[in-house]
Amino acid sequence: MEDEKRIEEIIGYDYEGFISSFFIRQQELQIFSNLKSSERHERLVKLFKLKIFQNIYKKLKFTINDFQREHDNLKGEIIGLGRRVEE
Picture 1 (tube, rainbow, N blue to C red):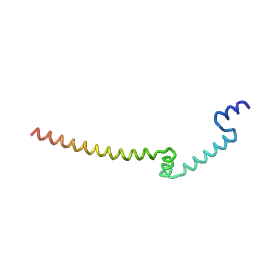
Picture 2 (picture 1 turned 60 degrees about the horizontal axis):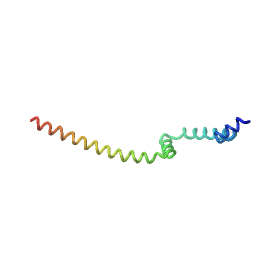
Picture 3 (picture 1 turned 120 degrees about the horizontal axis):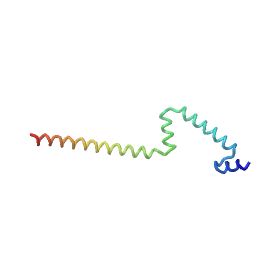
Picture 4 (picture 1 turned 90 degrees about the horizontal axis):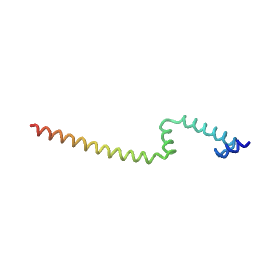
């Protein structure tokens, strides 16, 4: 009896509450596994509040692409100048 009280204090549930919670979670996982991939993705984004990171990624992706284009342009100019010097 003492052990049960200690376990209840630690996990915050009595035996019945724990069993009920466990089975409810199992049902939630079953429902989750039945979703389409895109629906699972959207639920995970909402659950873990990942939308902000998606927005940051999109903004950074454009910035990185801009830098990559600028890098490629400068590299082309350097190659062109190197050819002129060789002539």
